[in-house]
Length: 322
Image 1 (cartoon, helix red, strand yellow):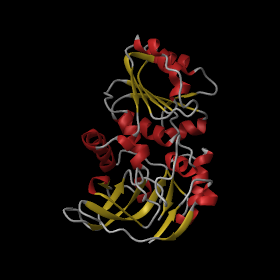
Image 2: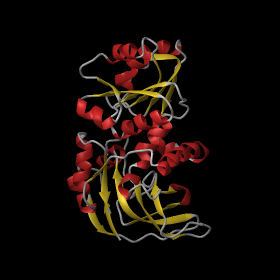
Image 3: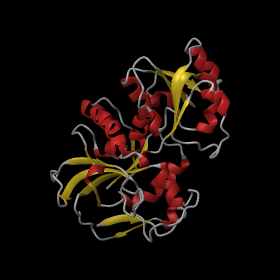
């Protein structure tokens, strides 16, 4: 099969290669998926660049990308799944050498999920990290609450805006332009470059504040959490790029009884994952979500796709067509 891979960390244009590798065979409990789309997430780009703290090449060759979508091509012993069924996959490259930037991927059956007929393969390649992160960050939200989504034009933020509204919450988001506000789909928004976010949130809520922040940058928005969260509120944060190890405002958060949730969907497995994933599946079956794949060519375009993600100015999730 054809695959894109790297054998050492470095710039995308220098280390990513296309070549022939052996097609995997599904073992007991596994499913072989013929991939049609491969999602490129910031975590994939950082891993290939060696940008994670303490990064070492865990395998001599890595086929990158954790997200993808396609069709079941074969099943292993003990697996009752229909060959030809449309599916999306998650955690393909998490602690494994073989991700979705290839014609095929072999995974445990639980990591291969039904893709409803109305959802494209490109959209399916956006689900494993962006959509599941958003759904997990909103776990526990109830109708009538107010949710602030920071970075609503981002891949996770855009899903979070939609999902919070579907859960019956009032949604406010922060963006850096009118165009990004339109992309987020959120009617209530704040331009964080032009306004004091804390003051704007309190004004928009008549001083009541918010119940939850779905947060793209914990360090940058900790002051907003302290100022705007109601007692008993929650911070659901999935990144802190501006300061990787920020100082925690412990007592201001403690005296408001704030819950801090630091999220990473790679660790979301088993019984913790099941209800979040089923909620997402319900929205997919109902056609309730819009998706924003940025299709960027086939496997031969992988280096350019990684550079596009690293540049940070795309709107949506970069997807390769396999």
